[in-house]
Image (cartoon, rainbow, N blue to C red):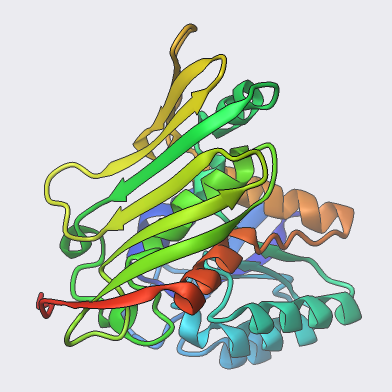
Length: 309
């Protein structure tokens, strides 16, 4: 019998990705939704204005997926876990590392699944890039992750508020891919963060990482890129070069066949969630979030022109 799943946060990402992906996973069924907006409903699926009201009315719910902004996610996640519900967290999994560590402890005590998701790791060619790089001598990696905030987050002021991450909202996707494909761990060495004069979070960032093998690893994030987005990772090794592009959907080695695939990131996340529930397991990798936290700790702040929608 499929898990009765509640989806919390019925915004753009929920409608574009979560709802159609849940429908593709037979082990899950969308049984209820919750949103502060009373008009944010999904067909005839029972809708509530808070997770608490939902769980009180529908104790048969066994799993909860949280697609709300990270600043407000901890209370709902803690509530669901404490009531014995399995929980899936949209990226980033929380506003702080400590919050997510706290959720891990609650999940362990309750004996339920907690999954911190990184959807870009599920892009079609990420595994191929990781496998290609595994036996090579990395010399350099350059990440360019640039897009138009007005297109991807139209009018969403929460991303500019403290805890909203700013350009690290997409940038953390790049870092999730980087940490998935690198054959060894790296740590942040320096960062420069550009903050609009009227906002609490950065609109651009430049990062440099320390690598034990002396590879030159850097990342550039920009939220004012117009036109088609640039989501590219350029890889140099002693054995040749390769490019992972389109957010991880396409991998092109210098000498070899190109690998590409369709967008199935969220379907794969929900398939993984169902498998974790069946196995009684948790999956919480915080390495992308640690790099973002380090950037805010180490980063040089540069004030730039105000941002207006």
